[in-house]
Length: 175
Image (cartoon, rainbow, N blue to C red):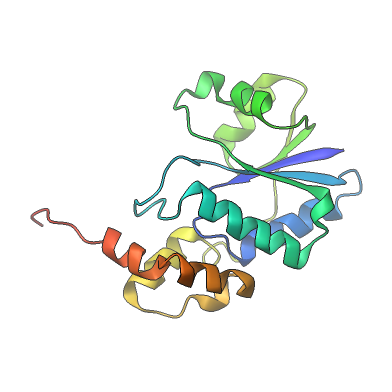
């Protein structure tokens, strides 16, 4: 059976590897579609990396840690209409039977779509493995490198990710 796993991956971190390992441990799952959400968004503090950069990072991780032949990896833009979002996803990706997510809204949208089962993934150190926390550590100059897979460190450097995130965190607004 094919599963859908979605996230923004800004940046991808070791918690994502844990989630993929968990999904593949399920005896009824043999393929995963990794869907990178908000694919059109970039250069913001919440979405600092482009869809293409995130696609490259996620693909590098999958190649390093898994059998790439078990995966489909793609991006999708936001449409900002919850009532049709799940149908839009189902229209744009290969067929799947189950979606893995801990987001209650996403669970409801896919369940409402019909014929889609929603399953949760046990959280693994969520207070540490979080894109938001990693970005905050980058801004503060704190250690963050151990939270992401080593294979993407050169890519973050190539994209000038730390400089970008620090720059995006600044504002000209009056406090």
